[in-house]
Length: 277
Image 1 (cartoon, rainbow, N blue to C red):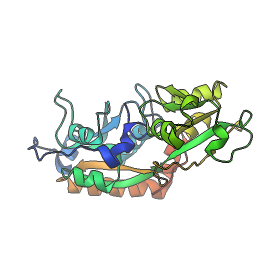
Image 2 (tube, helix red, strand yellow):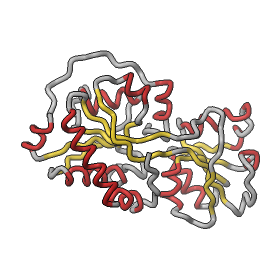
Image 3 (cartoon, rainbow, N blue to C red):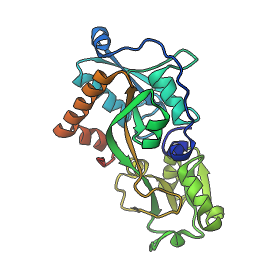
């Protein structure tokens, strides 16, 4: 499973507490500069931010950060664990028991107070994008939209084990349960929508924008669900707590990327409009 669009939003209730376990020696900024390489952890299957064997927003952002610091990039794609606590332990402050990690910095970490309190071994900072759940519909099959009741009896695609699936299946005591079609990823569901096999899809705004790219046949709308945070979630960076100098350098680099407009261009390359926190 991957982040945010799947179990990652559940950090508000499901992040596991991490014990204070001693960690191996870390690479501070001076050591990183001497080595000449910035190691960046990204999820290996989270389109449009990263993709196995491909490209993505976070992959391009990692390259831009390494360049700002005058370093070569070493990408460390990894599969998501059961929760964000696992991912931060494996990729930021300790390393995986299989022998890979930790990286110098991890991208697309929720800037969330609960997660920060649960993982005192890391610093989470530099928020760079706000994402949220949206409904996109086929205008031809659903010409009028007045909230979720307009989708009753229509085929609605969602990603398995996702916040979208959870809220839709439970909405109004399961009113839409028979209308829901489950797909491996939100992107898969959106491709089925494009092919005319669905009437709508509930997915992250970034996924919708990256797949449909302003296709006039479809309209994206905000929808309200009782169990869905309307403000969405914020993505940022994470480093080991004792890597304050690295965090400062990366924070400065992120500011420069925003100021120059390069961050907007990175997102636009994948059809996504950046929403700055």
